Length: 326
Image 1 (spheres, rainbow, N blue to C red):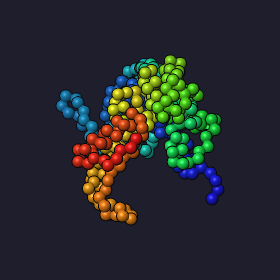
Image 2 (cartoon, one colour; image 1 turned 30 degrees about the vertical axis):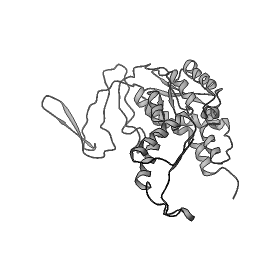
Image 3 (cartoon, one colour; image 1 turned 60 degrees about the horizontal axis):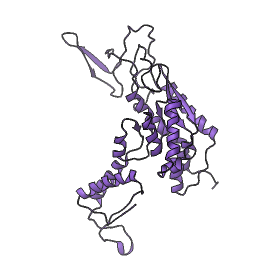
Image 4 (cartoon, helix red, strand yellow; image 1 turned 90 degrees about the horizontal axis):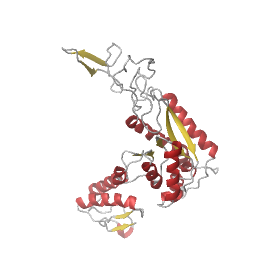
């Protein structure tokens, strides 16, 4: 077999930026006001919705067909200079998981937040997050050998993703404006709990110099904390606890489930399927003996909170682990 990157390594390199971008659009939908819209219902033989009018003039729209399609709506046609809306149905045609369009014939209200104007939404990308970051750390822990991507390739990938979203997603008169910069922070140190000064300096650049609305490369807790202080939406938190995420709400978003939920789900599974039962598939003198539970957790306060959540679920089920190692 020829030498080359394994499938897992290619996935790490190819989809790392996309994970952050996917979560970013959830934040956009919540935090960025677009236009004040008035919902109007339309009935036609080809539409999956039926509109009825009650005495007094009020209307009700009910579903008669495909639940994947939202009711059509329009904005205020009285706004001077309004242009016809181009977005119909889902933002990505044919994808039922894509966000629905909210048709509007009105202009957006202009600048609504730091990094948001009537024309653009500024999004920061810390280049070193992808050159040597979370994916490298995971690969190293798994014993994989990864060759760092060429910087030009990373930049083209990021720019291409922004071009894709600007082309296929509706931002109601605005375009995403990526600002890619090479920070001074050491991402691997930050993932291990140090490197705070460099992370803070990079976050200050994003908040005060770039003046970004969001950063889609926020994959380390120290960098995220710096962005939160600057009131920049930080996207990419790596499996932090529910308590940690809540304390930084609403400026932290992640495509990854919080580790509190992971710990609770694993504890529940253990209680239902393994607790108090014999190890039927074990080998040697362990076969048939009653199971014992051991837990290994990263030695970090961020993940100790998740350990506490998992232990609470086990205690509720009457189980105390035989060993807990950090």
